Image (tube, rainbow, N blue to C red; front, top):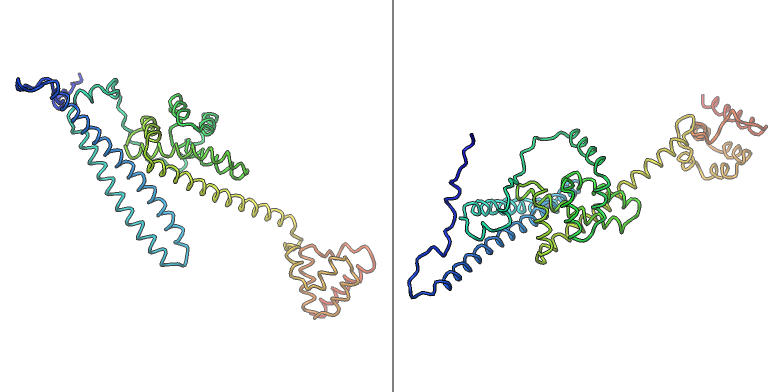
Length: 367
C-alpha cells in the first residue's frame, strides 16, 4: 500500500487573517497591506525568473553564433581573428554557465518557498500533473533517422499546415489540438522544408515557414532550459512572446533573420552541388573512347587546329599538322582520337584516308 507524504503541507504559509492584532489597529487594512506586499514579492520573484531565463536563452544564442564563427575561421589563415573568436567563445561559455547556475538556484529557491492562498488558488493546482521530462537513452543515428522518417510519414500534412500559420493565437491553438507536433522531428522537417522552398525560389513562402521553424525551436529551447517535456511548456512560450519586452522580441527576430540567412546558404550549396553533379554527368556522356573530354581537349589545342575543327576542314588540318613538330602533332592527334574529336576509322572520303595515313606516318617517324 502506497503511503502519502503529507510533510509538504508543513510549508504552507498561514493566512493573514489568523494573526492576532492590536484592537486599535485597523485589521482589514493591515491584512490588505500584508497581502499586497506578499503579492509584490511574488511578482518580483517571478519577474526575476523570467529575466534570468531570457538572459540564458540570449546567452546560448550568442554562444552558438560564436561557435559557428570559430568553426568557420578554423579553416582560415587569419590566426588573429581565430584567436579573438576563441576568446569570445570562452567568455560566452563562462557567462552561460554562470546564468545556468543562477537559474538553478532560482528554481531551488522557488521550491523552498512556502505556499499561500495565492499560490494554492492558481490554475496550476487545479489538477495533478507531473510535467518532468523523462530520462531518455541515447539514440543512435540510425534510430533517429528511422524515428524521423516514421513521424513524418504519419504527420507530414499536419506539420506543413503548422508551417503555413502566422498568428501567435493560431499557432498556439493548433499545437493545443495537436501537441504531438511539439518535438524535434517537426523542427527538423520544417528546416528541410525551408531549404527546399529556397531552392525552388519560393522565397516568400520560405520566410513564412522559417518563422514557424524558429517558433518550434524556441519552444524546444525553453523546454530544455526548464528540464520539462516540450508539450507542457509551449503555452508558456506563447504567453512570453505575446507579452514580452522589446529585448525578447529582438532576440526572436535576430534568430529568425540568422536562420533565414543560413537557409539561403544551405540552398546555395545544394544548388551548386546539383549543378556540379549535372555537369559531371554531361561530361561523362561526352567522354571519348580514350576517356578524355572533347571539350577539354579542344581547349588545349593550338588556335590553328581549333579553327580546322570549327570549319570541319580536313585539308586545312592536314596542312596545320604538316607544319608542326612531329612529336607535338602526334600528341595532339592522339588526344583528339581519345576524346572522340577525331575518328580515324570513320573516314568516308579520300581526304580522310590521306589524313589517317599521315597520322600513321607520324607514328612511324616517332618510332
